[in-house]
Length: 475
Image (tube, rainbow, N blue to C red; front, side, top):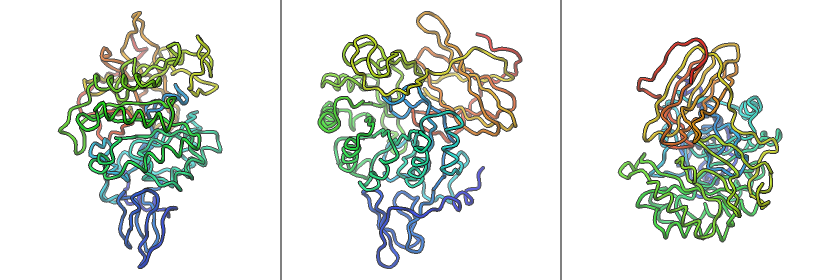
């Protein structure tokens, strides 16, 4: 376990966004909550403290283990499809959503007492160097809410931009205009969570308000940033036709109909364990309402339905992007136009756009089989390489396509002394298991994710098939 108090000491840094008040009190001006914090007290987010009349971050650089995952995990489908992102998150949050899936580390009460076993401490240079080393074009700020360690995000994004690495900000966007303007100088991609179009919902279930979120979205549109909107559909709370129409009309009028919309499934968690998981039919209903209103780019979240994941030409319906289990195959060859009808497709590809890396089998020492469960469609494979040499993981999804062919396996190179997580997703209900082949010097653990963009703190506890083998994996 990491030394929490040592973490805390190294993670204290003066905040950029505060005003001094009388009697050494301060007022944080990062988000619309604008906490007035007395001397030696902590703000609402639990990670900003008044130390002798100055406001300090308590979590500068405190991060989840870095995770390599598809960019699509962040509800971003029209920017660099098929690319992996280096995903990191921290602790704390400036909202308190009753349905939060990251509550174990976003709703902390005492940072010095928190179990940080699956967290580490990084500098901006370490994050950027890791992305360069792994040849990743995107750093994703996710898991809790990046508002909680805003200054660290800002410093890292500024450095990343110098090396041509894109920063992706997946957030509630409950933020004041001045810090948002600073952020927009260095961040190019914004995944905006609009939880409801009713202010009462925000006040009752998030302890916040709606207007600042909508203002942030309009500001980023004005700055010509890449924006995608995600709405978590919660049974009985925001799943009415009236709600969907209100959201869709607002996006149409303020952001434009080319804005991708994502409707994501809710799972019971935190304070809302009494509700059921969102049905697929309700997600399809939201998609149909958006389609009836003229939207062309509509996707499902926390599901793996082909129709909610694939990308199509808005005019002729030609398949542009084929997505299966979080892995992306770019079908369209033209980086700007549909191959079939030559209509602009509004998707930004890397000029060196590459499909997910599938390879032929090799020889390994160990194998683990993980059998998918009804409610689990995604896992993190955590890998620590204790050796001084590069080691290899081989991932095989037990799935046959419509022609009965097995896809090639995916190879992951793990550098000496590397400590990372990798995201793998179930392809569909017919897929039974995922098989992981690896070298004996690797420490490998599995963490089950209830949804995408999830960072589990609980190791998979049930027995899994683990067999010593020699030679090549067999089909």
